[in-house]
Image 1: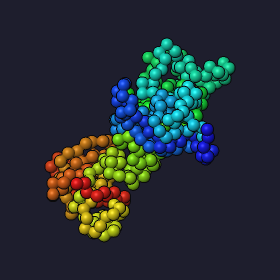
Image 2: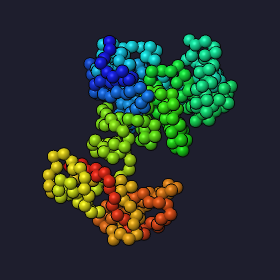
Image 3: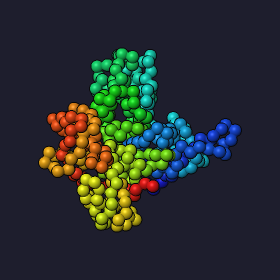
Image 4: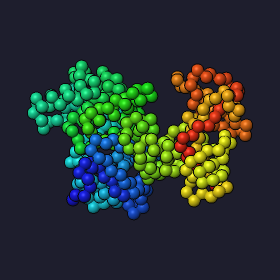
Length: 363
């Protein structure tokens, strides 16, 4: 079966749902893991399923890979049906590569043989050429004869990526590939992995709970919560134009401040009047919650608006200050680290919000 999708579309999910039976003997009663997932990926595009534990993102990846059956909807690869309630193409026939959370390298094989594992169909010279090409791309050309236990975590991750890319799969799946690495290495490798995938023109999906990984690697991000995609969009739009309160709260840091609608483009909060998009069906005088992020609150010694420093976290180039207003309301501010203020000290601040994010006040 084929679809009429654009020629460069590699992956399509259309209203895909999945559920596990509650008990082995009661298949009619099921627990849904996710429902009505829909998105597409074009050739060379990197997507990401981002969300907290238990939201269904890893199970969605397993359905795409062919490790799980779907209950409804359809999954297409290059226009061909691979999953529906009535049809399931086995995982080994889907031309999909996968990088697992624990890398799953073969301990008894050296780096070169690990990378060459999926290339048995090629002649020896072609196989060696592809291995050399991938090891050069991931910066491990000098480690051909090394074994996995002799490598660092970051090097093992690169070998796993090279092995998955070696057969030139139609789609690459990455399941929390950086979770076993320290924070600094995760950030650096995230940028490297994106560069490698783009160089290889690979189409890929990353699953993670870490927004920094998602932002560093993906072209498009689907924020998942309670088994549904809340927003599928670019990192910029997810951060600055979240579709709902969950997305706004989950992505980035910030505090919701109570406000009152003065006009269709003006909201009054404790820090002053801000202008921007109002929530739908909002009336004059109604109360809303405005998201104020740390980068919206600017340190300004000349400002008459004062706030007390109640906590601070040093981040190298910046301090993340927790500030308390006269009302007792607390908010966050990202301040250059040469402004080293003491706990209990009052500092001047001003509000500079370019993207106003407001939602109806929760009951």
